[in-house]
Image (cartoon, rainbow, N blue to C red; front, side, top):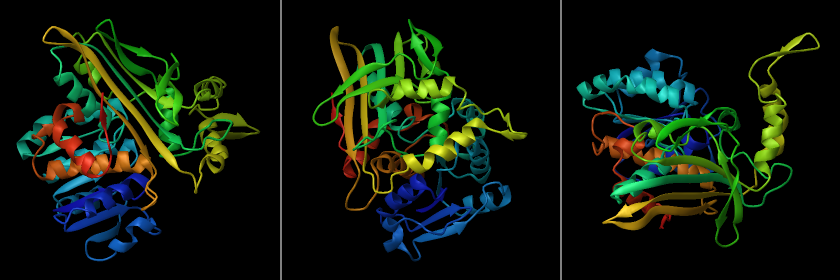
Length: 379
């Protein structure tokens, strides 16, 4: 298999690493505007199998030419590129998957369904950790029950050693995290789709061992399109982000003061975007080069089976990999992208545009995660 990974940041690099563990993958093109300074864990793969490739994602002809030479495309680019990348992949007749995170863009990609089916290829948006892994696991739980009363999803990327005031470190795009903190979140309440404010309805979530009590609160994007798919079928469905206690209230105050706004304001005669200033100010403090992270996840589906109450789901604590230097967020996000792309290249995902819960075979996906040491515990 010849694979193309768009985006050579943290998640794209982790995706490339995972692809290179499979001897059936003969070539990985890791493409980005700048492809110098790749992480150390890719150094041993320098050679004919790993080809760093300079590419401007805005150059449609250049992107399409690369796509036509590959068996599957995995995009770890910022979410706003995803619709155009999916369109180019469909035109090139090559399977495509991305990390997603923006539900409106996913609905735009859904419009490519008929063309993707005609080409005999699959497009799977939203295949990172959340959205992505959690949606596949939730669907797996739903399919184990006869009737479902509620689906609750909790996931967070956290520092193993939290430091005040935010008890947080950058584990992926800070810009993406702030989008989730400022966008309304889709849920299902009483069988009807609704939107709730990000950072709201804080609740304690207990984990065993040294993790202890975390807090869960609403953020956007994690359900992908599941709230639309299951409206009228499942009474309760929601996704919440996990952080150490106190984080949500601090971020709510920062947001409500206008410091995360995207509209420019006048500062001494200059137009300044508050969010740009916030990101520039806090990034040096939240980026911890020697920091070790963890990912905490719980997916809980409650209902009945054969007339009896039943609970299905998964729990996961994944930690920074000391052997490779690959973070828990990279393992759970970048590897998820890689697994999906490989399933697509093998034609294990049906043609058309499908979200992960619709198209990715859950049992195979979980099997692949466990092969990589991502140890999901069934509830």
